[in-house]
Image (cartoon, rainbow, N blue to C red; front, side, top):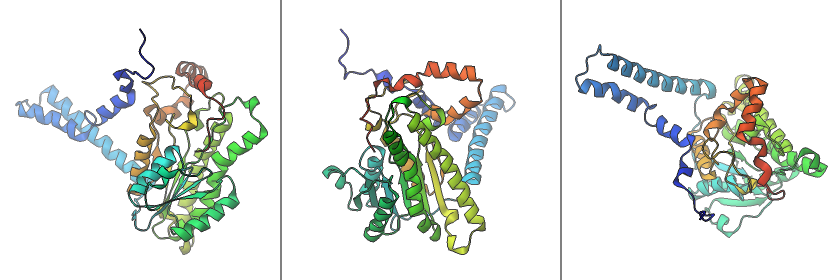
Length: 361
């Protein structure tokens, strides 16, 4: 007799990401790696013994990799800015549901000042997330509404210092089935809204000495493309390029701009490019492989974002594990790329999607 639909096996929680996390915190951790030669010495293993030499070399290699990673991060993103939650005001687009709602809940429970910009009104449960959480009706694809919302946020909460560009929609249709209205709305919400909010909130950040933080929520699909997602992936690819250009412009301002742009060096940028999220945006979509491409829980992704914002650092967040290495697919022979795409099931993942369910989030 087949199991009931709600019954699942414990093996569903065993993924390549879980294995990688365990290895990262054990064999690939400098402290654990250093214990191996120390344990051998505790057993009176001679220094010249091959086992001790190999263990010592491995420990040095692991430690060197961690040091180089830290140096690379500092060179790439500079010093962290000081995040003082008494002075920070968070703006989250699409914060009435999905990932944005989770982020609003986290910062709201901390008592932070949070402004949620969304066309959907937050329900009673959402409004109880924290005393500093407020909802502002705003279509972020409309530049005029964004400017109006900016004025209200500044009046109610103060000058925004952290911008989470999260709003998004999914049509989930073949390219030839998309109407001009659907295509236009896709780009307004998924791409142009980022330009509207950055143009509205960035000027105040670069004028303050302590700068601010801009988080761009894109998607790994922006690097891959996928069937039935031409409009969505094109917009997300645009976000990835926009993020790189924004970083370059901020670095230019920091080195050559007038004194009134003193905070440009302290405006941190975070690019979030996850795989499939467990949000209503992709309702009905089934991951081709639970082991190699597990669905990312919005709580897990929110934790990574919150941690990086709290640290005052720039960076890139890609989950699950394959999302960090997917760019290397582009250097492979085209024929091999086609085989890998076929085996992954990427282009058939949208078969279970029901058009109309991917509402703005």
